[in-house]
Image 1 (cartoon, rainbow, N blue to C red):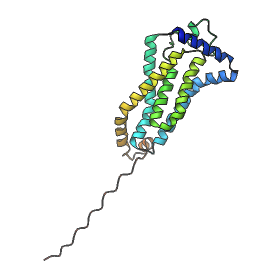
Image 2 (cartoon, rainbow, N blue to C red; image 1 turned 30 degrees about the vertical axis):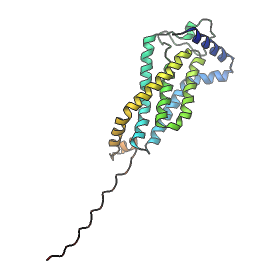
Image 3 (cartoon, rainbow, N blue to C red; image 1 turned 60 degrees about the vertical axis):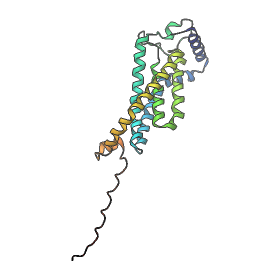
Image 4 (cartoon, helix red, strand yellow; image 1 turned 30 degrees about the horizontal axis):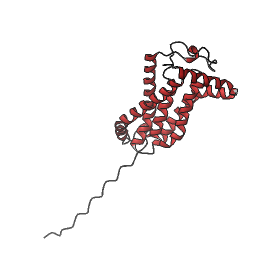
Length: 219
């Protein structure tokens, strides 16, 4: 899987990383993990704002973290099948990685960080389309940071992004209708915890007033 093209590109990126200021290197190290936390915050914000919308909007927001988890599971399954060693261990003539190289058995292909980022960006874009202007660059930057710090090949992160985004999109689009139907039923409840989770929804329309009966005088 680690062709000469991606090996050369990996060398170029890690060499470039060593030429950057130390604060850039530390920021890249931080972003590989902090980006995941920021996606988690965005999941909460997307869910909270969806409570004022219809049941489909709530369903898309609730499914977003679940779709991201599905993207991670598929990525991890592929990783256990391919068994590609990390470039920080196999590319001997490359500069040292900026972070400790993961142990043997923690395989390289595809990148789980990139898969989670791609899945989160896609799922959030479905739930909150305008946020894609933020989440897509976030995902791309997180994927690049994994190569920048020296723990993944470029093809690891490209495949991770693609797999995560596709799995999340399919997962969400398949389940959004039944999830919206379930949440629509839940929104009819007046239980405080349920109302807090799903939002109040639309108030039921008032029953029409009975028509007045015409008065008929007795004979």
